[in-house]
Structure formats: structure tokens, C-alpha cells
Image (cartoon, rainbow, N blue to C red; front, top):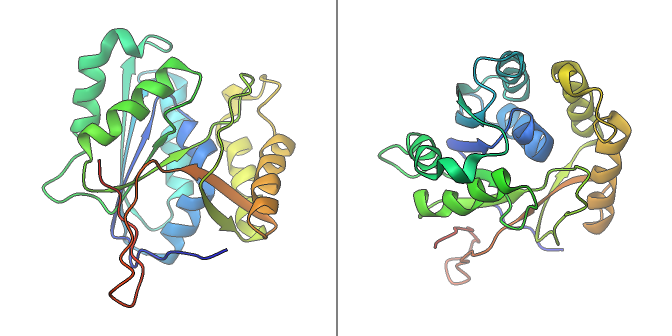
Length: 224
């Protein structure tokens, strides 16, 4: 399986409909990326959970998943399960993360997610970040809507174990859900790893990407 390496990542935007979405979908990638790129700027926008214990969990968790990063976390207080009704406010919150220079990477839910909040964030992301590589992460939950993955991020064993441990440590409010446990998270990482000839991996979806086969190197960049 051929790998495309985009070069140094200096700025990342991560989007989540709910507290824990980002860590579940892309926690391993974030952990590895931030360790490999000290000082990388990470801007996280979460649309629901503001003013609750979930906001405190999210701040602590993303600090742990983004070690050494220049991290900004914003957690809004839109109603869980009602984001489509608040389309304009949702888009404004996402657009607030856009700076004068497009981020190198945007992590957001994938567009075919069955949850309406996730799906709306996925649909808005490419309208705001038109010149960035956008990877749609998958969120393990009871709906059974896991996507056909097109991009894999292999994870060293230590990263996979750390992701599962950090999820359990920081999102204690979710411990009662039967799908939220260490075994389930590692199981999905193992399946994605088997699909790309490694032990563990996270899976992502990208809808559009360009490659330059004439310059001697491969640099993926997504455009809409």
C-alpha cells in the first residue's frame, strides 16, 4: 500500500459536534501528530456541551491528546441532537476557526454519518475550508454506520493503547454507554490496522484529493 506524505503539518483544525467526537475519531492521529510536530497549532471547535461537565472533560482530554501543541479549544452550548435547526450558528462557529491562511489539515466527521449533528458538521466543513486537506473521521457508536474507509493512519501499539486509555480517563461521563469502552475502541483500531497491513490504525474518508506525480514527490491536497 503506497503512502502519500504531505510534509510538515503546522496548523490543524479539528471539528466535533459533541465532546469526545474528536478524540474517538482521530485521537490517535492527533497524539502522534503533536508528538512529532512540537508547537503545531491545533484549533478545536466543538458545537455542544458548553457550560456542562462535558466541556471540562473536553478541555482536559484535548490537552492530553495534543501534547506540546499550541492548542485552542472552543466548546459551544448548542443543543445536542438539534444542530440542523441551528445551521447558521453552527456554520458561524466553524467559520470562526478559519484564519487568513488555510490550515494544512482539517479533521471533521464523515459526511455519511447517521447522526444528524455529525453529518451537518461534515457537510459544512468543506464549504468553510476549501483549500485544506479534509479527513472525515469515523465515530464508533450503536447506529452501525461505519464508513468504507479510504485513508488509513497506522498507529504504533503504544499510540493505540494510549488512545484507548485516555478516552477512558477523560470521558468518565460516558462510561455508562455500552459502546464506550477500551475493548471496543481497540477492536476498531485493530480492524482498520488489518485493512492496511499493520496492527492498529485509524480510518478516515476523503472525498476529493489531488496528487502531483510530476514533481518527484507526492503531496495530497483536497479541494472542493
